[in-house]
Length: 290
Image (cartoon, rainbow, N blue to C red; front, side, top):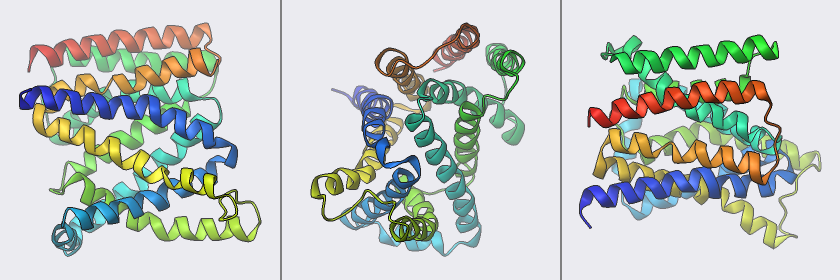
């Protein structure tokens, strides 16, 4: 198997993990409440990244980045965005809004293309312009028909889009950047965990070792697919892996609709049809230019 195919396989595995295994895991443990679940994801992701940074002997890179004030500030901002993204996504999973979250991940790459045009003066092809227009029409259609903003999908999409935008402005390994972001989030997660514990609202306890072990897996469930996907990007490039990423929202949508029986109204169907057409046009453009 050549490097390109290895990259495709790795990116596919990461996307499958995010879209299928991740949803099943966080949905299953949503009974503890989405706030405590977010806290555990923050805590054990930081712990997992500390272990991987030690194992891969990358602490020199960590200290190099934190010595640069600009990079540190950008990673603080991106840390806030990744926290928002995690929080809203877990809320969506716990609140039977997985389809709404998948809407966000369907439009996110197209929003990133628009951000590239606005902030980096990247050229837009006709197909990408059409895709962006269709996304806007889909969002406005939901706004008009529902009378409210489809905020779950939009927050998921824009928080991740701005996150990628910020990370593009600095040179830092994905895992080291996420470690620094996690370290910014960690104090707040510890305070939140303490308050949950003091209020006797916690499900995490040493008296329930099975639950304890499974909640510790929130870290690996976040970090492992990231490593797979980033490795895929390194071996196969952004274009091909950008296409493969759509495995994630597709699986989320299928799980939400068929497995968790979420409500999918005719208004949402029309909106999603517009999004799927936009995605098809966007992917066709990616294919033709790679």
